[in-house]
Image 1 (tube, one colour):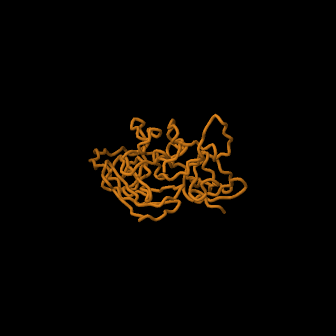
Image 2 (tube, one colour):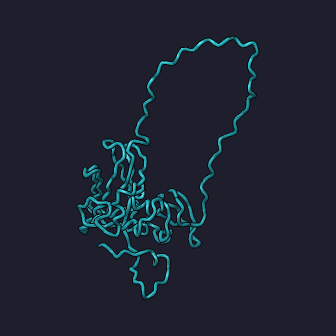
Image 3 (cartoon, helix red, strand yellow):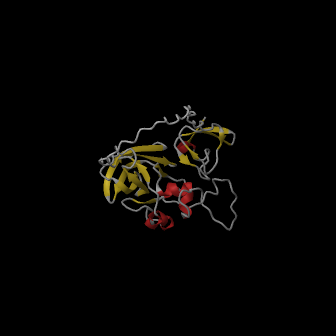
Length: 265
């Protein structure tokens, strides 16, 4: 099932000379887009110098049963490099994981691990998933900084897809922050009487808070732009609506991954 690693030249319509053998674009498969997995951070440019994974974040495929961020693939070993100090997303105790699938393989299970402990398992029973799959996972027993290994087990092969997601669990929406400890205020002496009343500052009405203008609709699709669900763009003279929030990269044009990320209007 593992295909040749391919940079997205064919998807961009580029001509490849005879000196460079390039496979058709990795028909690829799927990855966790939110909270951003390590490959998603590489693809968006939030983490630099990732190598070839930045062009195909959906292709971290290896034998089932691994517990590695890179799926055992030497070409993607950067994903298992803990020295890179991967940025962690602040989340609550319950986290919504969203997968973008660019090839909807029949699925046995989806699994989530922290430190070798299985946190959750969702059984699809061999069904074909939608282009966007969401799971709400309770991580309340694992507060603080955690590395979550998210695994997509394919039903009709011996392979799975691997994603590592770095989180600060319970740091956002994870309950009320306790107030600071009460302290006894120091004694206050009575000030001397003031014969001249202080000058009263003129009363002014504060200006209304600035409101953020709505997102532009109908603008041209552009790589490097972060789109949210519902945004509308124009590409090759046609309009598309974003189905899943993501940061666009070259070869992810609406006409390429329409079912996964964009809905034609």
